[in-house]
Length: 108
Image (tube, helix red, strand yellow):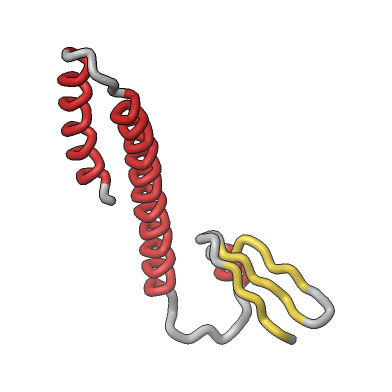
């Protein structure tokens, strides 16, 4: 459910909670659902922010790649260090971890 959909349901439940509380009816189930929906909304918003940050990193990487010369004739350490966080070498393969969080394993 989207954050807007969750907020609409929260608004409905809060109104119902007030009605039940005013008429002294049991409102525990509604209160529990409200707390659950608030947690879901918070998580959905955090997920959206995370996706936006990842999208921004991808856009920055694409811009960087697009601004580079199309033909590289020699090794340039500064070009390698910009997008790559870490390279780990093993006996039979190595892994490349990019700053964007993507990891690739390459068989030797």
